[in-house]
View 1 (spheres, rainbow, N blue to C red):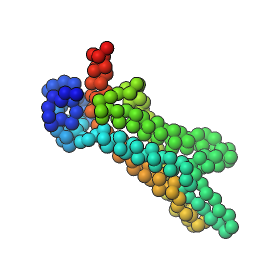
View 2: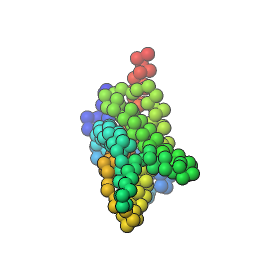
View 3: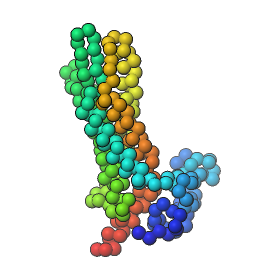
View 4: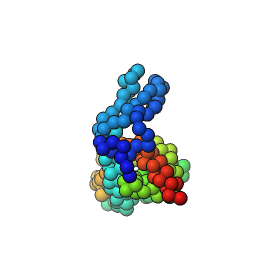
Length: 222
């Protein structure tokens, strides 16, 4: 793929500045093309418009792959073991949902499954599906549709909220029983960190530019 400028991290669709609206004050203004690591700020309120994140897709690919590994570990191994006298209980994420269903809380159980399993998996797997091939100038079938789904699903991934609630619960349970942290809990923490790093490191402008360039290249070939 041809680069318009040697110092840009990805080929651009257009030469010259772009027209962007500030998300804080809605001022429409010309935003220049940036070198890697630089940021553009609103000329009225000073809010940052965007930042050219270096190696954006590489970071998203690496952290997404690591998040998938942590996700398998978090769902396979118990995240805590509680011992009180002669009774010992090992708990996994699926078992937690099962206990909620057994206690006549199916709606809460469905929320746990969706917000801690389904939404994070769609988010991480979708990020890997889109970002990894784009590093080599390839867009897999439905990549644009998947990217739109990622933007819609991002607010619904609430692993960090679940982890925070779990930590608070463990502090209270520690007074009633002996609590032992399992591999699943550490894997859950790694999953939260890797997911946040993948989402925070992706440059959405670069992502959409690459998708558009790939789509136009495929159209020209046909």
